[in-house]
Image 1 (cartoon, rainbow, N blue to C red):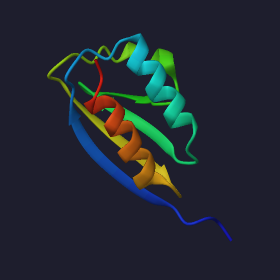
Image 2 (tube, helix red, strand yellow):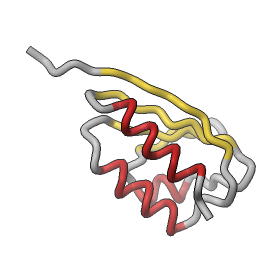
Image 3 (cartoon, rainbow, N blue to C red):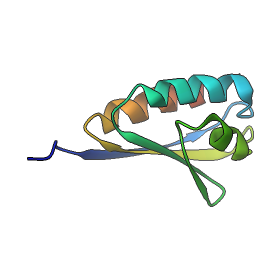
Length: 89
């Protein structure tokens, strides 16, 4: 029997550019969840556990990033990643 899965999604308006430090925090947090976490920005989608992918999004202050997760802990993963994005400096 497979594990139950859930999905969750939220959009965050960035207070600052998504540069190396918040990208590193974000990928470290995403790797700690069982769920697969993705970020959508300007028509591109990347795996949130990839620091190069996250930095390659080029997300800038004022831009809307959508956080999406699928898996057993999807809601918790989305909440944690959204918090990091919402407080990026």
